[in-house]
Image 1 (tube, rainbow, N blue to C red):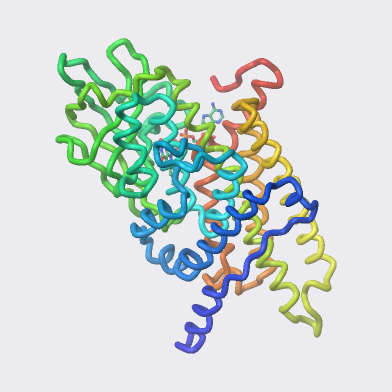
Image 2: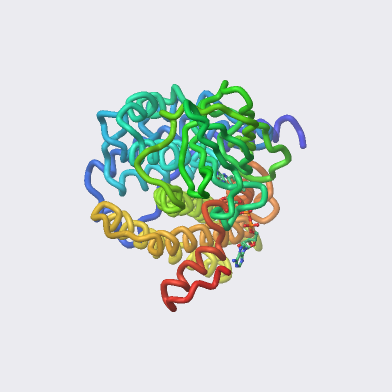
Length: 404
Ligand SMILES: Cc1cc2nc3c(=O)[nH]c(=O)nc-3n(C[C@H](O)[C@H](O)[C@H](O)COP(=O)(O)OP(=O)(O)OC[C@H]3O[C@@H](n4cnc5c(N)ncnc54)[C@H](O)[C@@H]3O)c2cc1C
């Protein structure tokens, strides 16, 4: 490829004129505030993420400067009360923020989801007043980056089997064990860690970088979420102050509540990735000529586009209604499972179909589909795999758990 072609490609990546599809006039269901929030995050993504994301992903680079920028635009903890530095917004607003950020990149959305739903949410919901005051404002502003340690090398889909544990030593806890596949870990200032006490009950505790015996090795070689950093959390006789235990709730239900909040954001985020791929395919099919006509004039291309838009529209309605149920306190884990599972699956299908519409050009970084597709392979696995969410729904329908 000539240098000329390279520079043409780079300028095209920077030229982000994304508008979201709204075939069923779902905007009518949004308030003016929702639309303003969406527009401001969309503008931010166009300015701060789109021009650089292909380069970051290609270089497997985590842009740490984005942490402060996300703090400035209110992407961290949108539903956390204003008094602790959060946005005090509703769940539709939170969803729209995740949609727009993941439209830019799933790795970038992961940074925001983990910080908001998996670090700020548990501190806000289960933390003491002192913990909230100490950590939440710094997490909201991006001064601190947090991570969430639940998964272990031998316990992924079955977190209840975790072996990370702590002992009561009188004036502190002694933490031992390891967590695996932890988003943000290599750069995090604090970790919300789930570990068993001596009776086997699960508790959350806040572990700070710098505590002796606590390390966060990076996981290398990912072909997915390449602009987000992922690592391990290793605890070798870490002395954790007693005031760092989250006092509000113990048992597996506590981390599962955090996952509900994060999975809700993922349902919206995946929709954003799907929209980006669809829009790219729609525009490309109007411009690309073959056999003397735009490829969009061929029935098979139209079929792909029509099916993509149908799935996006169904997913938009699902997520909007789920957001209302979240705000009303009516959403259950099963509702969130259905939306997360459906939206990630349709986003992956749409990324693949959109990639095909772009022909050979679709495999390059000039267009976003390959990056979205590779990212979505993580999104379909983390926070409960596609199949585990199916089993959660199967359990709800039949009353019979098929996990074991
Ligand atoms: C990029 C990335 C970031 C992540 N970030 C975090 C994070 O920040 N914090 C965190 O705690 N975790 C994180 N995870 C971990 C993620 O949540 C786990 O990978 C996920 O829960 C699956 O666990 P596992 O990888 O051990 O797979 P396994 O549990 O070993 O599953 C392997 C396969 O077996 C299937 N399977 C398992 N049990 C059953 C069953 N009962 N019936 C049928 N099929 C079954 C699964 O569906 C899957 O297909 C991250 C993962 C990735 C890839």
